[in-house]
Length: 354
Image (cartoon, rainbow, N blue to C red; front, top):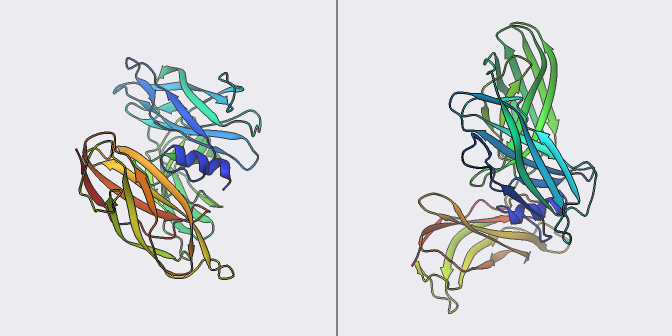
C-alpha cells in the first residue's frame, strides 16, 4: 500500500497518511432515477501508477432497469483548477435492475503521479429490459493469511451464456461502507444447466472486511451475495484499548460537551511487546471516528501518528471541536503503518454535545 492510497483514506473516512488526496461527487438532479450514491468514492493509485476511482451507482426507479450508465471523472493536481485529465467509463453491471446498484471502477488514461483529486459526474443512462436471474454464485471456501484465497461456484440454470463474468466488490468496515476494489473473473461461455468453479488467490487491501459477490452474462445476472472475509490466522494484536475518555483542557472527564469547545479524546492502550525488537519501537496510527447516535452519520474523523516505545501503558490523544449539538458515540482504532489493525476496536463512548 503506497502513501498515495493511504492519504485518500484519511480524507474520506479514515484515510491513513498525511499527503492530500481527495475526491468530490457531483450529485445528479433529484428528478433523475439514477445517481452516484458514494459520498466519497475511493481513489487510489494502482501498482502501475494509474489513478483509479471506485464508487457505486443506484437505480432509484422501481419498475425499469437502466443500461449505458456513463460516469465522467475529472482528475486534478494541487495547483490548476482545470482538470489535467478527463476520462469516462461505465458501471460494472451492464444492466442495473430496478432499485438495484452497481459499482464502478474507472482508471486514468495515464499513470500520472501529479493527480491528487478526482471529481465524479453522472453523464447519462438509458432505460433497458431486465435480465433474468438465471445465474447463482456462492462461496465454497475462503481464508486469509498474507493473501486472500477464495473458491466459488457459478451455476447457470437457464440457456447457454456468453461473456460471463463473476465480480468481487471489496468493501471496508466503516459507515457507510466504501467499495475499495472490484475483482473480475472472466468465465466466458457457460453451457445450459452447467456449474463452473472459479478461484482467486491474491493480495487485497488490508482494510477490506468483506465483498459483494455477483455475476452477469449476455443474457442473465445473479443476486448479490455478501461474503465476510475471515480475520488473518497469523495476525497477533500487539495493543489493547481498555479505556476511552473525553476530557477538557484541564483533564476533567466529560459526558456533556459544550458546542465549539476543544476536547481531547484519549485512549488507554496497553502494548504487549514491541513490533520491532531491535529498536523496541512500534509505529502506529491512532484514529477516532465520531458518529451521530441516531443515524450513525459520521461527524468527525481524526488521526494521530506516533510510536510506542517498549511495552506498558500509553495514552494517545486527539483533539476534537464539536460544531453541532446532539448525541454522539466515539469509535477508536490503532493501526500500524501498513494499515493493519494492531488492536481490537476500542470500547464505545457516548457523549452529549449541547
